Length: 341
Image 1: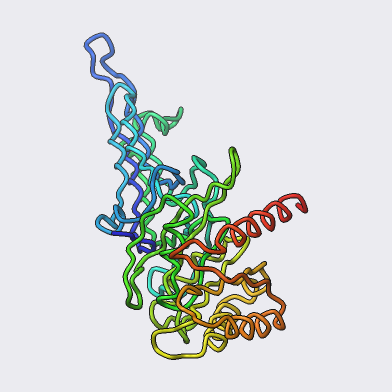
Image 2: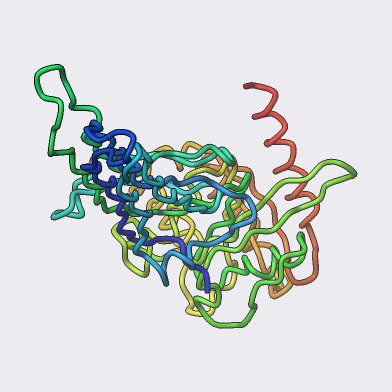
């Protein structure tokens, strides 16, 4: 099960109370106060870990509690500190602290794109001071101590945005999973019906020795995806970090729709969701040319898409025809983007 969005409840530990105590040894008949301090409550941290690929553990266990500090004891013994908790999440997770009452209000957020850099979510309460701290020349037997501070209670929404070089987009059943399985070691589910892919899938494409890129197969987008229709938001956020897009167009849609109109509709969804996406380098793959008996339809479709300013490649993800040219062009675009930094 791939889980890429969860809400969690975090509570840091309470600080332990300071102790009220006095020395009572035979050799010290009128001993002074010796109450120790309470231990500090445990804090809650979060960090990215490349070994973790999904938020499923937090989905099943959304309540996280750090340990409470122990109370102070006599003979100025300080209570033990509460145990800290470190939450590990996938690299690319966005952490949003939300209002306890209104989830739509984001108080602050962090983007975890670097591994093993803990961020404090909830600080543990400080331990209270024992009565030994409050003795003075005029008040030598204080019979009070500080209570420990309470821990913090907070709510967070965690959203995973995949970190990939290339995003593979298109209408449902455009052949994205077939292409991904051909160019990488990924094994997506493939079938001849819409919405076969229900979750983003990552694959690594090897161009030559020591040279590769990561591609994300994004589940098929539909009209209204930018507004959340068909889980649009759940899918679209995974291409926000990509550098290049491969837009796969089915030249023979099973529903009889027009391939060019489908192409324009998907680009409109990208633009409405985040205008930056439509400005990313985009290479268009006209897929399933193996099903066509005449190339005149391909030529006309190429002309119309090129007029929109895009590079176009006619391919068959099933047979592999034209796929290498498409992939090497994408690799070239990625190299150009890296060299221009």
